[in-house]
Image 1 (cartoon, rainbow, N blue to C red):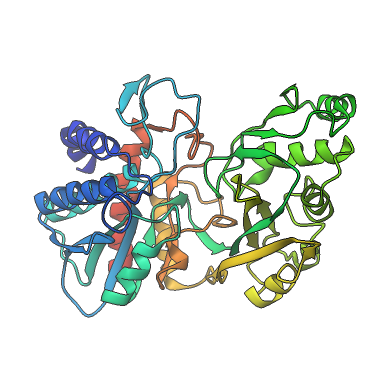
Image 2: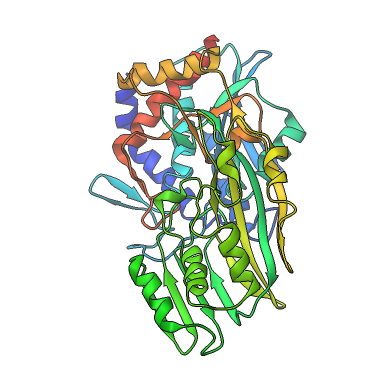
Length: 443
């Protein structure tokens, strides 16, 4: 029956997703809490939820929700409508969704607008099939997941937490643990004349440019270091560009950080500078915090990951964003103590925000209900839920874990160029969310 429903609705699903993708919903300060485009995409999504029969509400443009069902307990399905910036390398306009060879392409088709649409159609199917809800189900749509999740913090302040549920903004069959997070910067004066690189703090930097005084470093040593590391670069009269490979900050091993290689090459080329020396001493090419002492905090579930995502110079001070994700069985206090007092002359580590780790027992009723939905739909009983370094909405609202939206073996270029979603996976998501909601309804 659901396959027939999907056959009848897949073109509508694609059209709705195309509408949401058309909004460049990056963080902006041109209106509302997160920008005019986020206001508009939220209004569009609320209109869609109205259309399938949900009772909707807009919470001051921070987020909105659609509700169905009765009862004292609430199941939350939490998606986000904001997106990360688009780097170079797109083969089409990121905000005009296209279909090619069974895939939909556009910024947000996977992260996380596609999951939002799939969740809507899961509820549409349940409503049209006459399903009886024993609990309330709220489809909550936020506009600030990529840059702080203030949207869901606002929801919790206004509406409270949910009793159980999921955010389809991770991997199947689900994520039972998420690393803790520390955000900040490395800041201090530098002889570097100008420097600019990176798209976002939670993306591995793929390109960095810097300008230094001509003759202030050994060009041959610089060239030798990067050639030996097989890193592409350009240098001319003190102007340097280093190229890396983008990846999500939670998986820095999957990328090549241009910023790290720039500083290590400058250090190897005898560029005398406190900022470069501090970076070499405490970061280097590390992506797991070995030089900072985080190796000792590694547990049987996870380790630390570190990313320097964005860098620039302003008023004589170089500032590099610091994105740190620490083991699920550690604590904020232990991890903060390792870096909060680091200072190398006038260069220092500054911390702005922290988030505790998330951990659910795999034997809990909610986890079992979600795992069963995955197994029943896919037939896969071998793949286990995982612990990740990514930070999802599950850290901002109690009672949920990440469940979907990416399937095992998929490569959807999330946070990268040519982000995509297969139409087959788009359909399968709807089926999985239907079963997940039904199972949670019985818990």
